Image 1 (cartoon, rainbow, N blue to C red):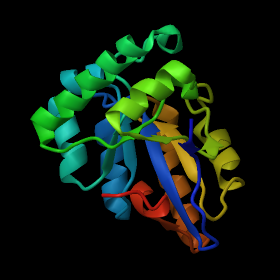
Image 2: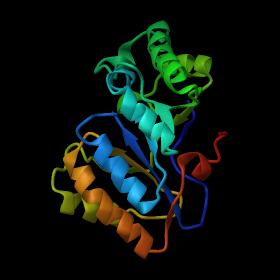
Image 3: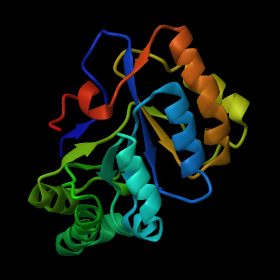
Length: 200
């Protein structure tokens, strides 16, 4: 299945994305940082967590960030589900966002980044574009924000799509350093839909 992983540009533009939220512990902190830098990001939300944190989901939307689906359950065995079970799971997140925000989801990021024919069928039925990344931070593993920042800054290049998680303290600590560095290098953080030329 076709997965969009980076922008086709030579301009000094990147996009940043966050998976696995929203979560009460870190999502507000990350939203505050993004707001202070005037940056738009994309949040690929797990439906179950969005349902538990509706006000955070609404804040993400109200502050102008892109929202995509990261499944409803994010089950460890997600890639082994039959296509009809995957479709049912995707529909739950889709309906939740539609009912709470009045928007129709168009973008999907597979749990663990795993794709297969069953998922392709379910995603095609939903009419989603599948979004990957070009820079994987591994911020759920790297707990040292300084080391995480060092790894992220050497990956800076035009069209990069960064994968972060709004579930990690090290990400929240690293993010201001990273955004300041991006600014110093005269790069611009643009919305995911702008970088990848996705329909609004």
